[in-house]
Image 1: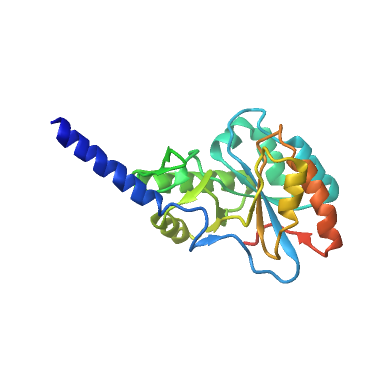
Image 2 (image 1 turned 120 degrees about the vertical axis):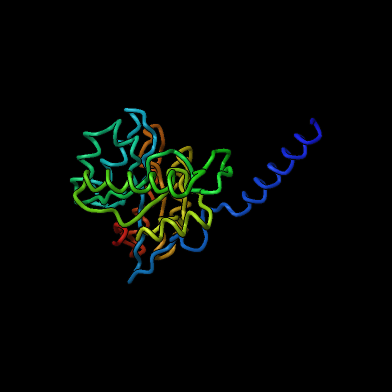
Length: 234
């Protein structure tokens, strides 16, 4: 019996390892760069932390002051914990709110692990619920149906990508990922490596981060280089 259990466990671990090789943040069906006319970049901000104080007010105030548009991916749990803020952001024409799902999980449908977190076991139920509930909430919040989706944990497998695209949603990847622990110098350096059409991903739910200062520094240089920020297109 012990040998049989060990064999089953070994096969399970092997299957998970094989599946993990097919879990990705970048790949077919995921948009990291939007072809645009001119030197355009797209700032996107993720909010998934359900803490009531999970909101980078400094960053939003800076964007508003400088009239820099951004696309906000708001998770169901963050919206529930920050309803007044969510309504204010959705009503601000400077911003565009999009679907960030419900569960704080990667969009994987084989039940395998991504970043040590389980994905959906049943693609007909869990992943579809995640996407549809997220879309319905954004529709109620903003009055428009979302056209973009980014998983709260931005990891996918090919079956999940097919499901998401089949719901007429584009998957927002990123060419530049700004860690919430990065220094202003690191944020600036990463942003200044941008190419026209690139999507930049940062966090909206990390008030302790120095993202705002890094973006401020980079925005000055980008402006001198002829770049402009835009919201993701429909």
